[in-house]
Image (cartoon, rainbow over all chains, first blue to last red; front, side, top):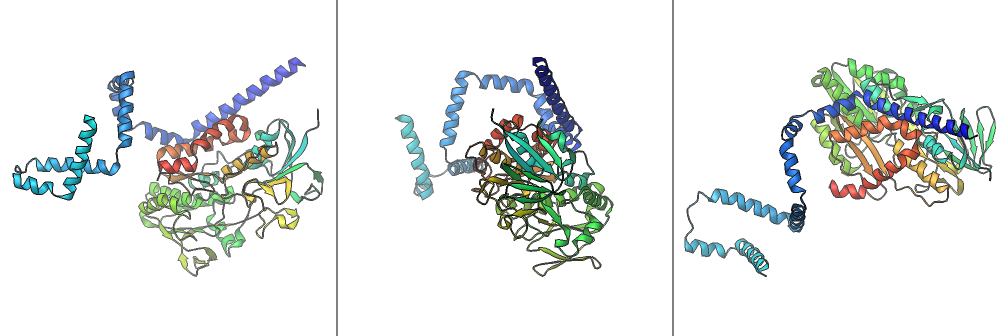
Length: 136
Length: 395
């Protein structure tokens, strides 16, 4: 009886294996699938990644050091706390700074006038709050 | 040891076969199917646009677990009151539990002229022979208007008309004749895709590929001689080659009591439990039931799992989850994912989704045959891709 059970089990295992082989065979015969995978893998970007792999691995090693992981987590928390609109404004301000680099220095009277603008006043409030938080 | 209860399954499609294989440990399972083969219907699209027959069918016996009794015969009648099933040879069978899952009946004559149109140009919802006719059309057409019109909004595989037109576009482009072919997709909806959210994914793709979409057009009458299709709404479209998605009706089985079926022959089943009316020993699953919010294999699969759990005493319920892999041509794909509480997610078109779609299709036979192996994998997949979760990713 036990021998029959053992034989049955083996036959079932073999059948399962054959079914898995059939599935793998289906995948390997699927031209559309293989074409899509090839297009995804064989691309300019993947070649660049392969070319830079030693640098990438070195970078990953540095990033995954415990002390760096903790810092990354803090940066991620900071990113999560940031308001998207505020970041966009900040980005635009930096872009404006580049253009302003070529501009002439501002006179004291223009600085005073600018300070009275509501947008500048709001921005100044944000910066002052930040300075207050850093100092506390 | 108590004798196992008799579980009779009518229909050996995706739902019926998965249910049989899921129940075999606990029930004496018999499955009645009208052909010896199990057909993978999405393959009709692959035949129509790629001439690929590889995954079309397998012998049903090779997909059923050891111990499942298979009877190849037509079911004439199901009497839920008497708990009996009558086969074509008038043989009477009784059961303790029944699941009715025979799929749909395609009625080309449901749209005037469509029976003649399908003889000329084929379709990708009925038979491999008709799908083969489509392949003949798309590989020979050189110029003119190629039209796909939806005649029945409740057809099998909701994204299939879109897959059809986009795969035809791919063939025409690869053949270098696309510039000479005007492609039209006519739909009964107010927009290209009925679900507004998913339309935001699909419509730009159709536009980019130069496919003209005609909305509020429910194909009603085909004038074969003059090559014109008239809609219920009174509009008219001309064609040089056309495919009209045929009318789908319920199975041709007499079911008692009569209120178990609706006017189109679909079996009235609870959308959460698949139970038929008050009969707690009778279920309808898949395309044949009114409980399927999308006529797809995945829906039938999920409903089969719900029924298999319910008969074992668990309070399993359908969530209405859809998971329709959609091919867009040129190795791009997306998924129509929704449930009763969430509209279709805006899953973007990309190569990864196409690869996922193809892998699902290639694994199909194994999924049917070995639910015990695939269940844990699908549990994780469906949990992690719940519409609620995906909506946060793809707003």
